[in-house]
Image (cartoon, rainbow, N blue to C red; front, side):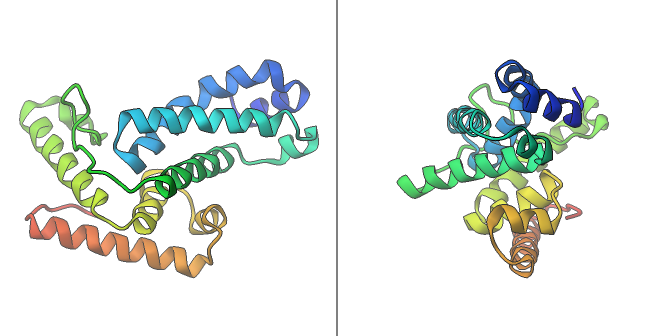
Length: 192
């Protein structure tokens, strides 16, 4: 369902359209949370909490406010806040590089991965990038993921993080540089 159509349906009747919103966005919110935590269990809990909070907000908002919102930025902002609250409650633990079924957490989206040799190289690259990404300080990791994985603009990230746009650019730049340096130390060539 197109976002504009979904917003109109939510504004008209949040109770009926909420399920469609969840079905439309659950995989993307989960994937975003997984990139932040690299833990399927934590990502699932963050996604669930995100939709619970979204429901609470939508059930109290006026239809005009619902029609005017930007769905992706709004849901990702909620997920980011849930993630921050979880991090604030406990210290970060070691993050596994593979999911429980042995697949890499971050799989490249290249169609050439159907070839076994390229698939093996891509999987290894994905593991190395994931390891380097999780080694970044949280503020840089969040900024890099929002910019390069989720495709938000610097302005949108600044609004989500409630930081000046220049600060966001600095976090993305420094995070990208640290990723590049870490990957070069591992002798991995990536175009970041």
